[in-house]
Length: 166
Image (cartoon, rainbow, N blue to C red; front, side, top):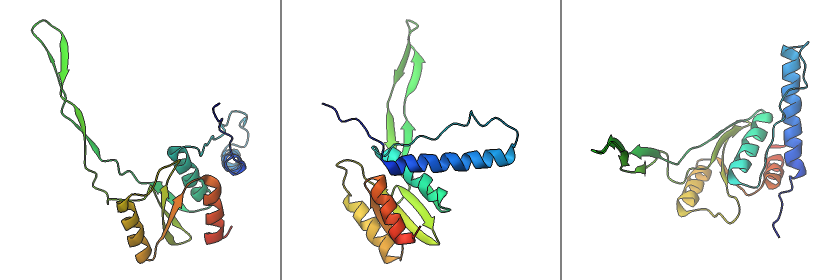
């Protein structure tokens, strides 16, 4: 039996708060417009990507600055396409990934909340921190920054409220 995703109340609350903000902004700019067609935001927190989007939206909703940090590297395309003697198009070579220029172990989200530097590492499921990520955490905390490992949206909101107040 597969477990269906059940959206937590806090994720539903985030969707509702963002919708109300967007609706208020829209009606302030266009007082006579029909508001029935404003798209309601949808979030999920059961994947790393979904949880990252929830956290960034939550921080921005509460007047913080947050951005996703891409540490994936860059694609290096060594493919070449040519036409052989029979007239068929052929492609040889591969796509490879070059090393990233970002710091090894960088957190997934970099944020500034109430004047504090905050780095958030998103871990979903059985994902664990690497040695490089533990070193990065130590450097951030030694420099006076805040480092948090987010495993789900509910625990993140609890941590946020305890750390920064409502």
